[in-house]
Image (tube, rainbow, N blue to C red):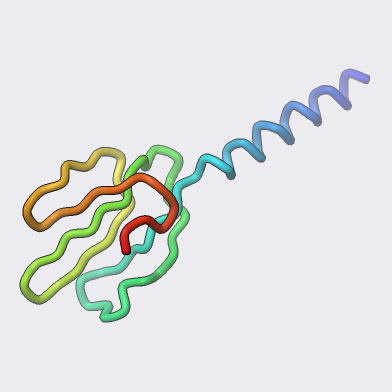
Length: 80
């Protein structure tokens, strides 16, 4: 009985971690498509897109501040 309870608790914890993991599009500066879907680390709360005259970079971030060339969002694949 105790083993069943422990197994159930572990299963619930594993499932809840997967649900809370943010997914962002990511890419390096030389990637023209910039649509690589990445499962972010649990500490990442934001998807960030930085656009300059000739490059686009997308990353998972723990903290993010939007600005002139930077856009931050929270939500799976939110940086369209």
